[in-house]
Length: 73
Image (cartoon, rainbow, N blue to C red; front, side, top):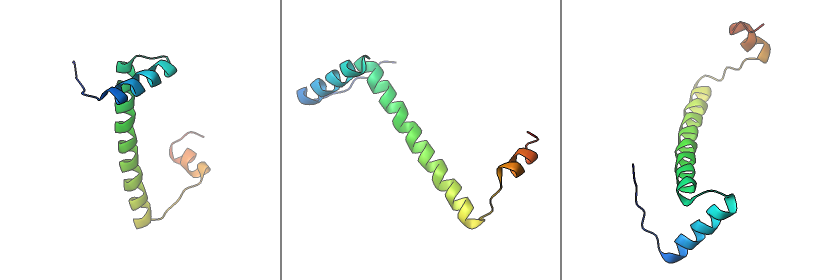
């Protein structure tokens, strides 16, 4: 898939220089940046769900309890 992006000259130069600094193409920089942003938002949503669940039922388990439950020991 091809995606086009309109940028002003200042932003274009800034992005090109940053990609050069990282040793990657502009396309790879944009791809990585978008995927990282999506992952960060997903992680934040998962965290918010987990913390809400914990606050509703604040039960914790020791590492030994978890290992036993998962039959790792």
